[in-house]
Length: 253
Image (cartoon, rainbow, N blue to C red; front, side, top):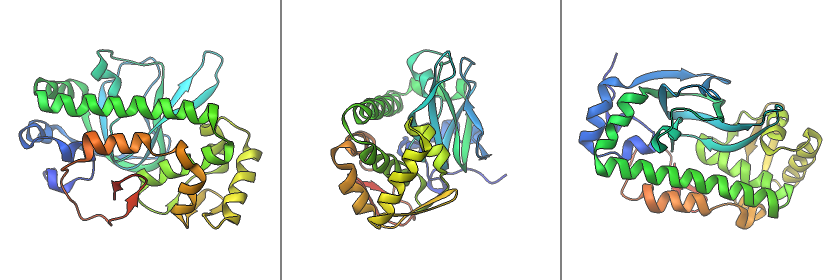
């Protein structure tokens, strides 16, 4: 198997690590396929592996005792699954699974936690946890204070940030599940965004045609967590060969 090098990856947290910290885990990283539906964190079960997402999109889902579910976070190439282990817990009631297929780098939790002995590395991951909490807080704010139209635009922007491509494998049914609304309501709002020439929605796919229109619709419901990620983690990161395009407040991809 070819050696995994820091310059040959896309995960932004791995790119941000000090060189010696990356070399500490590099021999233990395993490149894995992450198909749709692949569980990364199971509800109530020990988190034995961390996944650094390289491509695709994972959803964190809150699950109630009576079976109700709602997305409470998204993870793409900017992050990792299983971050609750950084807070001293080995499991969580939430679950995380792949929403859009991709691949990632798998690492045992014990090896991952050994990185925390390095203060600079530990600080990077604590800052990442902070951005995750901020994403959750702004999702709650969007649900309470912004319209369905704005929330959908925000959610599509967040997906677009993490998937890099304009064609996103998202179904109406899944959009309704993630937003906690009826499928018919999502369909209506998608048609409105189509009429604004922001997107093109077909069965199982949403194509972004004009990101700026989505930004205008989402308004203040989108942007704060993205800006905080850039402020705390994005600065001085290694530059790769991916297409340069402004994302929201300043994500590069």
